[in-house]
View 1 (cartoon, rainbow, N blue to C red):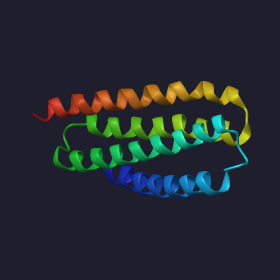
View 2 (view 1 turned 90 degrees about the vertical axis):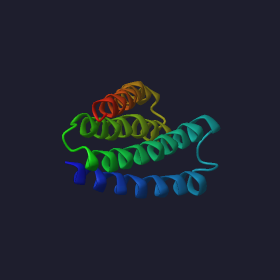
View 3 (view 1 turned 60 degrees about the vertical axis):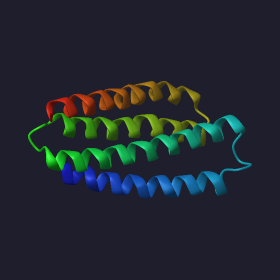
View 4 (view 1 turned 90 degrees about the horizontal axis):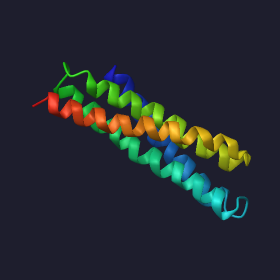
Length: 124
């Protein structure tokens, strides 16, 4: 399970770099400032949570019995897909209703952080 998260984190980092470069070089002048900012926010949160998944993988390797780490990692991954993914789709398509998915992704990220904390307490 943790190896899967490691692979996903590595691919997420690659995708975040590619999308960040695409946003900085390919979307300037094509999107209005609001949509470009939304796209950049998606890239930032994807990066932050790529590192969060990597942290979970590293810590979970030392505490394999604490399953809350694995759940935190999966919530970070689902949160990235929903939060950042919805921002990417909204910015690129202009369909603003897709933004309704963003808070669900944000909630997954928040719960992931709480589970990471719970796992830390269980590791003491």
